[in-house]
Length: 176
Image (cartoon, rainbow, N blue to C red; front, side):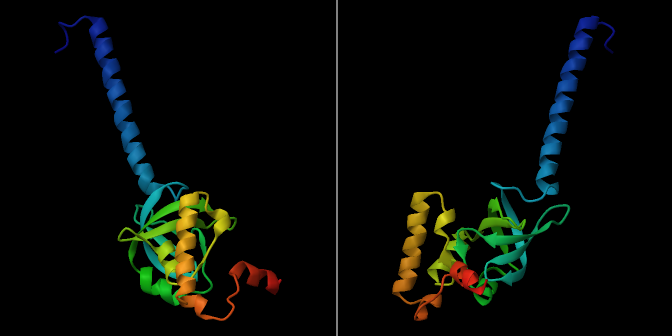
């Protein structure tokens, strides 16, 4: 079949075929790594919430071949035992999670979205969580989150119904 081609053409053709094969294997490996590797900072994943540990920690089941599960904490908020509200909002539902960090306990920290709506913001809006101002780097986002919290305070929603709610971080310091 290739008898009429000079050897240099055969070598060139072989080289091109090798490059094509390397490219195909690279693309396959890249696609599989999206399914097989655990959660990574800066990435977005589709998950199903399978358990709720406390006010701001969930167990997230990622749709992939390995069926990864991880502990997930809401980013930018501290929720004092809002388990009932979280259950109503996301339990056993499919959500989109954008991992923003990994905390010192190995939990993923992320923004959780359901139908393009941020559940982190929804928690603050309903008065179920405090804004973690120290962790929000984007000034515009910080201003937005503080506005949601101020609105919840003004309308005495959730934890703001109490006479003097104690910030969870302050409460933990008192318990030590």
